[in-house]
Figure 1 (cartoon, rainbow, N blue to C red):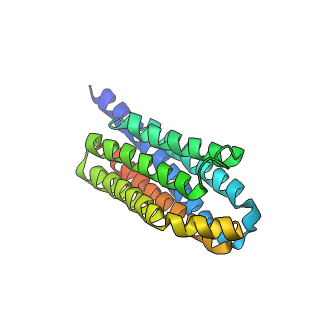
Figure 2 (tube, helix red, strand yellow):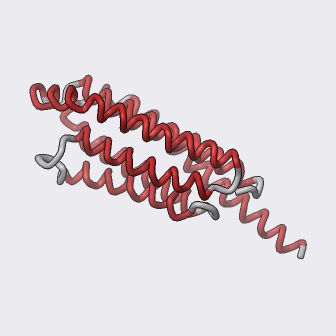
Length: 194
């Protein structure tokens, strides 16, 4: 019986370590996203797509390690991967403004994270998953409120530095909340509480 609990503890530590690594990598993606306005605005869509793809893959990997809330956690990562693919392929152009695409992604992500909050095992995981869900919902609302202004700027001037900066800050804040949540999940998994 002792070997079973030792094996379970070792498995918890392994899952926690993997989640910890992915959490720090998502925070690194957030840091790169904050720097996005320093690049060429003509390549902003591609960069946003690559960053979404990277963050989504990392979140899906971390989500697959969770015992409680595995499906919504992986779903949030998969949704982010999907948004990244849409940005990379440019299939959204002409259908909806990029601002709306990001707002829809954030809104759907917040719903998946809210579901993960309800299914989370411990109170600290619930708290941090709830914070990530609330962050994405608040960012989606901020985008929807400012969508007419951003769309006007984009239609008149193209992808300006201000528009790229607002996208990068919105994405970076979402990635930062996700990375911080993953660090707390990792801490709980390593302690065997998740």
